[in-house]
Length: 297
Length: 116
Image (tube, rainbow over the protein chains, first blue to last red):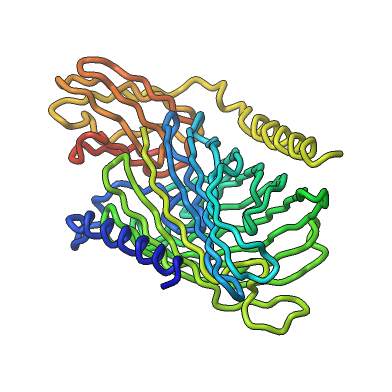
């Protein structure tokens, strides 16, 4: 059995346990009696507009796995060990360290590799630009996230990589306390210096739409779709391919201070410029998954 | 310009922009005070009101024998108020609407602020 399939089974088991653990809450309830929900993590890879509560601090472990290339075996993960806090009612700050794993064999253009390594550090600043009220269902947050890596996300090779992710995180409360729509706009330029001294510039640009339904006061399920474009230039001039990712999302609040979020996306459409194959597996992956646990204090 | 210095410049620019956005003249306004007591696991009064576009200071007096946590997702504040003490929670100037609050340690303790 492929290793990524085993990893998927583990993740599925974890999600099943999470749902079972929260089953006491999964029953017909009056949504009007539910407390408001923080929307930041209810949309999977799509990030909601929430910035937390003033004075709130949170530690999270956030793992993103990427699985499957055109040939061979490919499994890579990046985990954020993250501290976040909300110093004012409009700003949230996050920072932390990154760890990466790579398990690659027989993939064209990538060296075989099996490694686990600390891979970098990141910071994030989020500003709530439009706030939701009982009269306005829309909320919008602007976020910037500079990241420095010493391990290449895709190949696992030693590099010096600088990334500056910029996102617009918006969400709409469609049904009070029940149904939410989330939207992200992403621009992610990066520059990489390889061990051989080459400098590569690239960028991702895209957006997402997500729909999440609160089936119990502590459980939210949904789905999301992402459209992503890749460029071999930071200024979006050298288009190399694009992809559409689609999949389900899950959010479970175990206690008022502990929650998890999980998501899985499969590439359902993609193209590589100059290579007439289905899907874009050069710049993106066949599957990606996210699992995040958070402790507020 | 190297990649590192470019990153530094962009981060500083972002922090500067946010700092400017935070420098609102509304913060200089005097806050409207709302006095609420917490007794027998309930807010008294549980329905309060305040004017729009003016900062608010919640004064929560906890008369119970155990701590409570005043929290509100829509107000974006939380504060633990020890037993037998008073806590002050400062809230930004708000737009008209209804903002719910609760004791995070007690599901039954609910209240709402109406801003008009």
